[in-house]
Length: 184
Figure 1 (cartoon, helix red, strand yellow):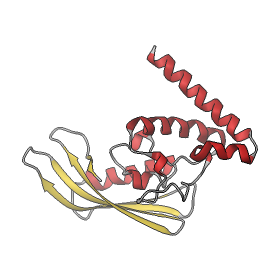
Figure 2 (cartoon, rainbow, N blue to C red):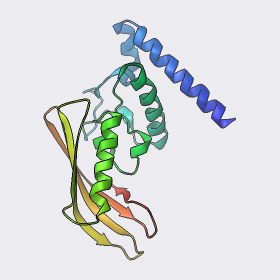
Figure 3 (cartoon, one colour):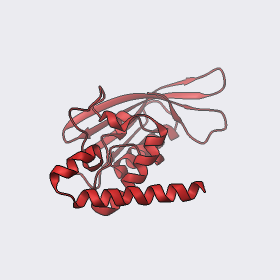
């Protein structure tokens, strides 16, 4: 029954997005961030991202579904983190990137942390926007009493000439496959 509700929700979201794209500009303004390719200046948080993105997991999942649907329908940018990057990117980075760019940034983080060496760096660049690129660099490593290993990773992205740097602490518990964000 839960899958049926999810299916209906996804169909409703897709229909709403199609209707919104067909409406004239004054009516589409009522849909706020759903149809914007960049966050609104008036709703930005201290990180420079739209405050409607929020930090809840539910919003991230719904944002990923809507981004997937709207991306296929018209290339609309999604500034909510896609589910695949949860645990690897901070909202401050993810909200400035399109879904495919978010995945490239997350892959760079995985690559940089894979070797578990301080100074390890991985770079990426967008295939859809020529002025978007980034790096992930391991800047510190510690061992916790419970056997977990933690690394401090600096993410730097450049979007349209604007640089954003975010430090994050990533930890890997004993037996875990990869590092995940412990705190932003």
